[in-house]
Length: 355
Image 1 (tube, helix red, strand yellow):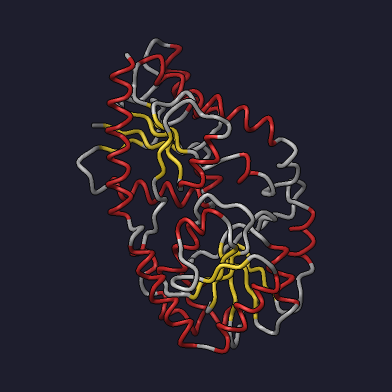
Image 2: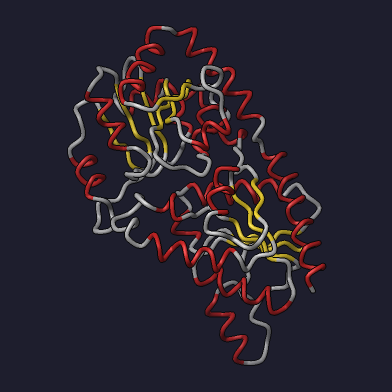
């Protein structure tokens, strides 16, 4: 079977969690018996596809199932083509109204419009995939008329191999010493950057956020203010080419995000044996266990207490880190492959029964 695994605007969002999720999907599927197609367009681009259509040639590549990972016009075009030609269509709900809010300036304002659009788009599918049961529950409130199934985004453990050897060089590069509290990912207000900085101001530990940030007009005022004038013990590194440097340099992974569909960086931190401190939100309560593979907190005082406990107790950090590694292994790419192939079979069967 030829499977289209499509991510429009891939060059622009490769540094995002969605980009990482799609890389995980494609690497997992590479070890399957199916052939992977990554562009739906004949000739490799919409422009070339349009020219081919003008001369009477097919505008679309040949594939047996379409799996789209974003929500833009390219995805809509592929979805409409799949519906017209009776191809099984899988749409991956990496984006929800709740998760979009707080990511960019004005993102909450467009929330109601986005929800209506997502309800229409996702309902076109034979099957909607999402990263967690929390997200599946969220989509049920829109509601989505297509069946929705949760599958893990997974973690590519192999790409993190050798992170330990980078600890000294990474700490020298970013001028870090002592206990380092860190986060990884795009700097968004939704992801808890304000809480991250407020906690830093209440402690003496080094705080580092590894990941890109925007200070342009569509960045939130909070993000612009904090990255330009952070507390003295906070560093925003911007994009780093080798993400292993982040997991090598840090000791305690702190993620006070307000909304998350899964959080791939959490799994990466766990795979590297970091002690993980998370906000107590439904998706993390679903996936992780407080006191076993992480510490879950609600208030700033609870976060501060958790950091103090971990700073004073290296054995606790080690125990949480070892348990976290086991949790991450349960989300490896073998599981991603199995769950994707099961989902494709489900979508194919559903499409066949609705003809």
